[in-house]
Image (cartoon, rainbow, N blue to C red; front, top):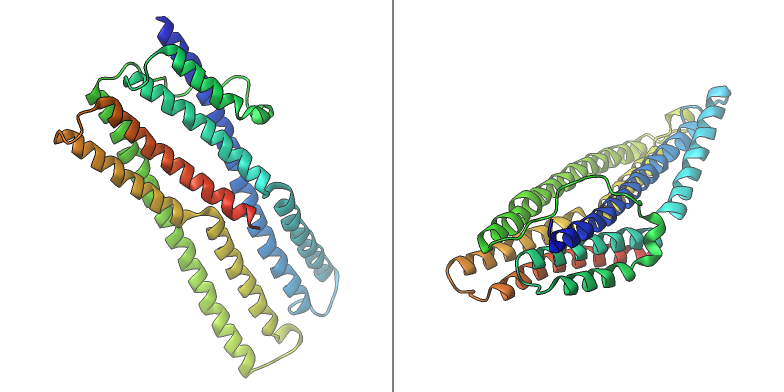
Amino acid sequence: MSTNDEVVAELWSERLRWSQTAGRLKHRLDRARITAFAAGTLGALCTTTTATVLHSGGPVRTCAAALGAVCLALAAFVGIQFLTPDTVRAWTRARATSEGIKRLIYEFRAGAVIGIDVLRHKAAEIVTAATDLLPYVDSDPTPGIPPPAAMTPETYVRQRIRGQIDDYYRPMARRYTQRTARWRRFAIALGMATALIAAAAAITPGTGPTALAPWVAVLTTATANIAAYVTAQRYDYLAMTYLAAAHHLQSLADNRATSVITDWPAFVAACESVIATENTAWMAKWSEQDSAR
């Protein structure tokens, strides 16, 4: 193995460490969001049940009331402890570190970065900027995709550009669009159920087990929780940025194929800039919305 290959392999291993760290932090965030959503909804359901269906009292009512209190407390605890701006920033910065090293390696392998020392120095700068996150990083990465070898222009376009467009951006955009549609259909169904129950409560008001008004509040809370969850996950925004990046990369590839772009280093830099801009955009969106809480 040449010196260049050894350095690239070492930096690629470093990238994998940061990528796996970012994945673990993101998984923790997603799990915390769904836990807070489920616990808050179940807590509201149990609380309302104790006031209506289990109005007469007894051990069942006591258990339901206790479960409701625990669920609401859990939702609050998870939100305070795990859904914080600092947690989001840790994840986005770990991802940015991984993607920054990855970009340098691809630029070097495609011939847009001259000199192994430049590659090593720039990668070191990226890692140095995230040293406060080192306690989160595993010492040894799990083996993954091997680092790219030296690339010809055709190989770069096929592996890096087409790979991003066909294997990542477009499939992920479809996935997030489908998720948004499913959650919105669920929210619409709950909204319709809420309207029907509210109308029934207005026509036939009751008390105790027959009271419908409290259930309107429960369904309203559940609908609001769904809307908050979908907003927090940024599905629409991610789908939009992925499709925009795919379109931009496709345009660059088409222009090069028709000889509109002849400067190879500039072409590689432009493609990597599109990928970096997409990463920066969604990371800024996450940080912006979570900081506004």
